[in-house]
Length: 369
View 1 (cartoon, one colour):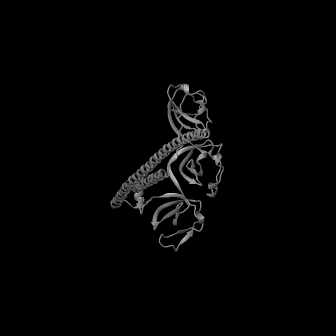
View 2 (tube, helix red, strand yellow; view 1 turned 90 degrees about the horizontal axis):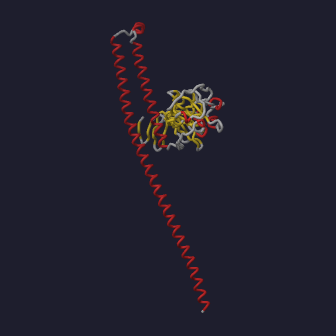
View 3 (cartoon, one colour; view 1 turned 120 degrees about the horizontal axis):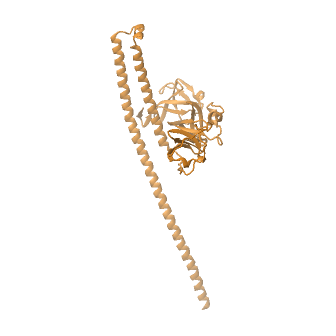
């Protein structure tokens, strides 16, 4: 991850949507070797890094585990990733969509999604609408319109026995395994809810149960505003996700190195691999230390860049807030001006009426004389 030529370079993901004549070049500076993009249109690709050439941003892209080359993205859709969130499908409104068909993802989604907890890990904008990436048991099941999915909302509201008017209590969110006996309790917790579907989880004596929201009374469930993230917040979340992913890969690599060192130092392994020499053991330890030092330095550099990105994001947020405040002031001035103009128009209308009356009176006097 780095900042160069005014762009923040880090691994990003896109749905590749480019004209079929677009080329993917093997070299950024030599366009002799290339392949057409048409084999990868509507596939998910990773932009490993980015370079600014003139005023154009070029992406080094990878499809699955294969590095393809350099491409200039014009119409491709960036996938904004963030920490996983839980949803359920709203069966009454769900419809399949053309995006999944174009991506080659075709299945009976509703039979897979029905009653199950779904994990959303990212979002995109396609044809002006928000879509979520949906995972079930860690398997990708395409992108679906946000309007078809109901988020799990954390409530943490205290309840007691009087708030539950029905014994319709279940052990899971599918509401297919009723609990025969709900323990007596004085204090419980309305923990989470799928508000559109109308089910909630309650915690009673340390155990979690599920119930229809209509079985709960006397609880003031707040109306939650629809969460709409700004493009700046989406970019920031994607950056944080990528940083966390890179850090996890470094940790996994270190674990692999340490595991290999332990394996090679095993007595039986050393005997068969002829690695009993103290020199080899020392070399292994030195190599691990060097790798650890390299990872630490990389993480320090990463933290520094993240702090810079956080500062940039805060600055952008402050600018946006100031713009909104300025807009509100202009609106207030506009409303005030409008009120003044209406008042002036009323006064002018009154004066006009009085003038007309006075004119008629003067006209009558002239006729009399």
